[in-house]
Length: 216
Image (tube, rainbow, N blue to C red; front, side):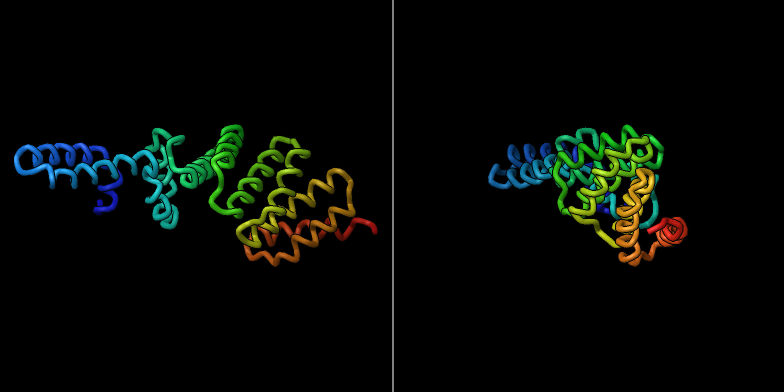
């Protein structure tokens, strides 16, 4: 375990130790120096509640250690005390794991909490609405799904693959409604994104076969 992980995982015990050190220095040496360990202890306690272990999450995600990332999230005992941008990231990640576990109700609740916390960037907000749209569609609520997906593309998404996914889902909903005109419009927007994700590219190819059979 490297120094950074030790500092993150053991903030409270270290803070307690620093407070004890501060009193020891104060009583044995001078209070003019004792304030230093007290200040560091206060910073570590604040970091425990405002940041939690979230600074380590990215490393786990990049290395593909999803299990480790999920365990880190479980270490957050008071998510409502997290600093707002960090809180929104926390709920977004929780929603991703809930979606993987097919707990759609929990994922939806976590996404809404993330949105209420305020997303650090518009693209993250758009991604949240994209996920809400996908969840609503899985639940069979196409009206709500359509609204969320339209909001996602209007706000903006982080990349062309996500944008193409949103337009494909919008096109699919329009087909269900037999709104073929808008189905074609959204499909053409999906193609125009020039997605590179193999799964999205395959979805475009499959939908293209259906769109080609629509008259007009």
